Amino acid sequence: MAVGADGELGKRVAPSYANKFDSAPTITNRLGLCLALSTSGAGRLSCPEKAIDTGPVKADAAEPFALAPTACVIAVTKPDLRMVALSVAGTQLTATATSHSPQLHASPQSMTWAHDGGLLAVSFEDKTWRVYRAFGL
Image (cartoon, rainbow, N blue to C red; front, side, top):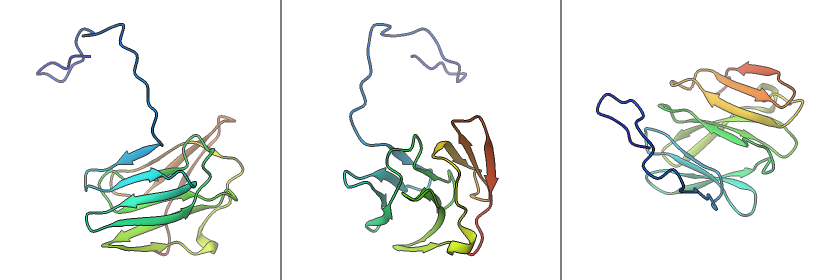
């Protein structure tokens, strides 16, 4: 697609082009953090200083993790469907306590943080959704 000076999508440049994505799910934010799913099924957070392992995630979930657009906060769905929020400070991760980490009823279909990392919206295959706030970070 061509993007015009006004930000509008223009005509297709190569309508027959097929895009193939063969890498693990990866997301980035405006602060330079990058969160990816490793081949071992763990979340891997790349910070400016070094890469940090976030531990095992529900790798077969449609959306196993989320990264706030303008904050150092991530959410990870663990293999047991427990949602954990993590705060990033340098190369240190602080996780929410189990008492503040909800047990989900199903794998997330999609997850997205508010820009400031204050709220996390999660949707599920059964067309239900929940909004969470990270406590204890």
